[in-house]
Length: 110
Image: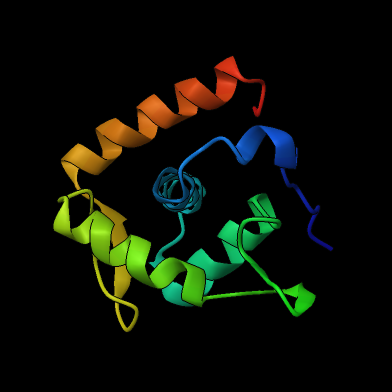
């Protein structure tokens, strides 16, 4: 059985949703896995459940919360891919993910 890891809500609530998504993509890729849409929804919910929860059903992730942020991240050139393909970070996105990791460490998320 997989160990459930999530961060303290009070800490990650201060982080922009776009940055949480970048971190989740980084986390999936760091594990050597491809980042399909379902994988990304799962990772976001696993790491940051209160941000990505389906409001009426708190045990389920809400994939709609990734729609606009993913479009914004693609428009900004940080992420490549679409829900029917595989997501990956661009060079600019990888640089941003390392900045986010540093921020998480500073506020004791990692």
